[in-house]
Image (cartoon, rainbow over all chains, first blue to last red; front, side, top):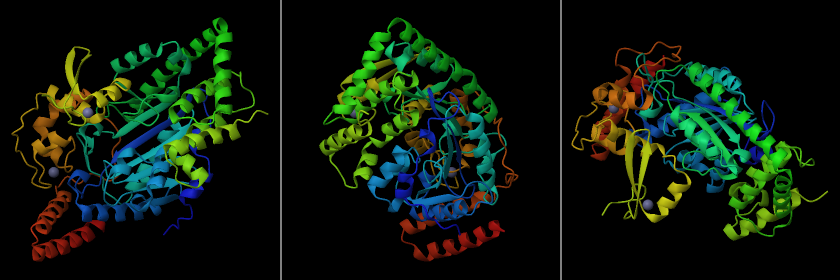
Length: 355
Length: 161
Ligand SMILES: [Zn+2]
Ligand SMILES: [Zn+2]
């Protein structure tokens, strides 16, 4: 048995992979992510699983995940026994989904110490594994998750048919069960409204766009998650290649618009970035939404070299550390929304204090 | 009065979405509508519902049932989630147009598991027994439930080796 020595507090102290601000094109591509959906052949899908079946599944997979023959050592968290705050914290880190938080019955998540790998148990499918990397690094994500998938499969039998591939609870995921996504920060395209053209073009080629926190979340902070929708009839490699073809065009588009803004509207851009920084340095109370918007300008300023006493890692961290659960963990107490706005402003003032 | 498709309160706003050549009417209450307009890309559930409608799979009376997990096609339609892997066989005729609609394909072209998939339907026996067990517990037939529990344990041990 692997002994879990890492608790939520340790995860909190440690930085997480997708915030590192390194890797190819990291000033625009925040992170690359691949997830696979898998189910065990001898169990019903979760919509037809009663509590005792969910427990059996959870025990089996929990045990399996702590004893993999290959891949990173994983720490397991029993989501049922976590506090609401800890669940929300894991969600803000994108280690678990809203669906897992809101599910009932036995469920959990296994996470490696670098917070690059996470495997959810009893979400929509029995297993939802994901690998995330900083920057535009889909090949590395695929290499890691392919190995993890093989390691898990060593002594479980996946629900699979030669015709339809990996069988999933929802037919939208059947086949490869893969979702390949990249999270882009596109402030210049957003500012100039060029983003509408990009979103329209993406829909035509069956790529989905979501906000920072997935389905139904708004594109706050000008973060856009682009991912495949089709999972059947194409190989994993083909699906990855499609993203690798399309995303560089968006990166170049964002870069061209940034250059044009610098050339034609430098003073205005400088003003916007300086004002954003000023508010974040001085505000006494501030909402999450406003923080995201202003930090987006700061992030652009860092990328353009207009702000030189901050790096991408620090700005990326500010986006996450000012989320409600992170803020309460940093403060070590539960806070209502008004108290959070004051605590958020205080935290930002301390982190962005003028040198 | 139409109900809001997200929260089932009375709908006050009726949005017409046009994607390529398909027209879709979406009924929403005021609160959900403002959320919807901020993030117009549909959630998977909305998407599923639209796809099911598009594929002409609207028959509410469809009682086709999976012998293993007990789910009916109507239940699948309602919740958008299947009950067990075998449903892809049982509902095959109905799912094929749906898959074509979603994926423009009905054939897997990706990774294969290292273990050969078990072609005999033996793996599904356990799903059926778990479903029987659930029903026995619901009916408070504890004698039957105990029998089934033993049987499930035996089968699991066999498959583990
Ligand atoms: Zn509503
Ligand atoms: Zn079934």
